[in-house]
Length: 454
Image (cartoon, rainbow, N blue to C red; front, side, top):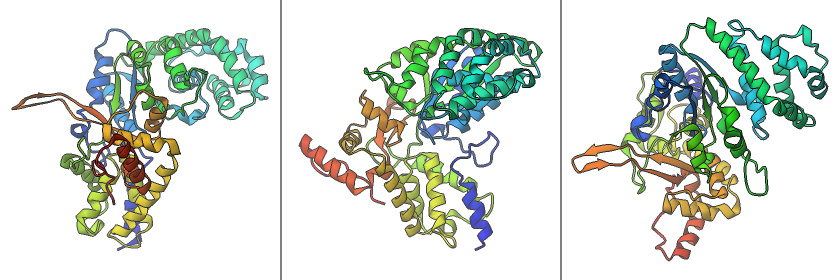
């Protein structure tokens, strides 16, 4: 077995690579994701609505949102829309983000994409009138007249990301004049749209779901609440359609009704369902994950997955089940197992090493007082409206699943949503201990629920 083939397969499982719509690695999984369809749920609203739309899209990190958003971009472009897609966190500090940072990120990418189509004069005037104070705060020597509009706003974004000493002062300057900045930006958008061969402009701001939650007051309000709710009027003021990705934990806050009132339905991309709510294996979900693996491997070899790539069906099944139906986790597990593989097939011991590493990393993310909460979720299959549980959602210690609305001979079967603990956590001894302790408190039999051992 050549090292070249091992290297090719290894790179085919890059966990950080989003897929384009025509990528041969792409597998449609909506049937095992509650019939989720970003085209129907998000795209058609933009195409059919007479007014501008501002929508939220969420799901756990690594579930495949960026791939689905690329599918949405393709659909909207085919419908005659101009789409500006960008990964917002490329220019943001995930641990310290405020509304002004997102506004600047949108401004930079709009200028970058449309500066050949529209007049940036209003934006340059906005910057010029505040240049001296912003220049001093940014500690820069660049000269206003010698720089392009994109470079000027890029300087501000870089300051917000890297200069912690002056970050708040720059934000205050921008926030105090955000209304005039949005007005200038909308002038630029309107002028650019005159020259675009497109019916509408759509912004897709990806990766905002990675913003780490931090409390901003004593009442427990987070920066997520502040950005997407308190500053919602500004977030919904750009003169174009906008799709924002949001942290999944925000969807389970006590302000979810406000989110719905402002943005309409929040569209959630759940995990691939590899187990049913009662814990039994869901074969269609396993088939989809195996197909995702096969699509990657088959680009480089015609050898069957079993026994040439994986030594047994049990190893392949265990890989899919322990991932929890999270695509990025599946990719990471394969790469780690390959690191322990000198020649194919991937053997059980190599997979166990990958699982052990994942268990260690996820276990380290669980605070001591949260083990009981995880045990509770594993039994109730629900997430209470509480900051600690939302933190477990954000950290992917708890995953979300959905079944599709179906019609059977017995009648209409409604769509159901439930949560469960990540299998990499459920398969640890520490979780077993927490579960037994929790069951003892409830007076339940100790074998009611158990972590599936690899």
